[in-house]
Length: 384
Image 1 (cartoon, rainbow, N blue to C red):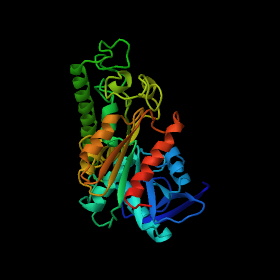
Image 2: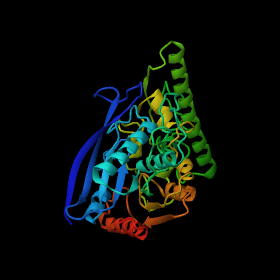
Image 3: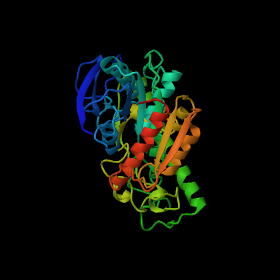
Image 4: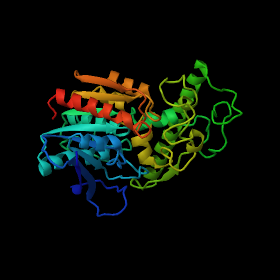
């Protein structure tokens, strides 16, 4: 089936005193979108994909759904391609503005969120606040009124190859051998699983994994404490709107990548979705490598981020679908299961696509299974 790709954008008001994106006037935000639809045929329902940093309009599943006759929109929030200063609450505002716009622009009656990868936790955070809005400030204390934003609840949420959240994922990948953020290259060999000299080698013992996980959380909390202290120092100096940037080394260090017995699945050991985890751990494209005080608290902090898939999922009531790709090198089966178990929806389903990788790049032959699973779920609920 032939498809049409229609890029478009819209502007919505932004009253924030702080600007975290490059260019453009103050007081408004431009959101870039793409509609992908069959060349012929109308639909009352649209699948809306989004991700905190966007960029997924050409994902295999996004395109395949359009080729299967579905209407799809991909929404790129204001932080398109750069999460250095990203505020999750503002991603929610952009997604809400997109929903309001697409209903008036295209006349869709029903909206289904397609939460792919990191878009899963954004989708749940959005629906949580659309159903029961509570947030009026960011974790840093800056004004961001989700209560007064009139967010429109969607009709369903699909969590497709999704992880729990950026904050939990960051913590589970954080290198616990870094004990001092000012000396990140000095590492505790006992916890440095990427160092051949580490005495703890796979298969890892339960005691070591417990110690490793506790040390990851402890490191996340140390960085969070530094971020809070930094903001307090700026405020005390009479500069409450000032910001500071910093680097976080060691963000791809997970026992799962080296020991297949951890969170067992069909994935290949010794690799991750960014390639060799030993390289990605300190490489330039690692999670949260470049960030800010406010952004750390909003998207990466284990305790402070409100975009927590498990907590958000418990507070949503719309029909929900979880798809787990069993050879996923980014979002492992435990994430899919935890999301499914946490969902407060009475109507919830989980589907396992055996041997499928995160992007359906290595196993494109399995893409039709995912399309069929999504299509069947939509049709069973009259989301045609």
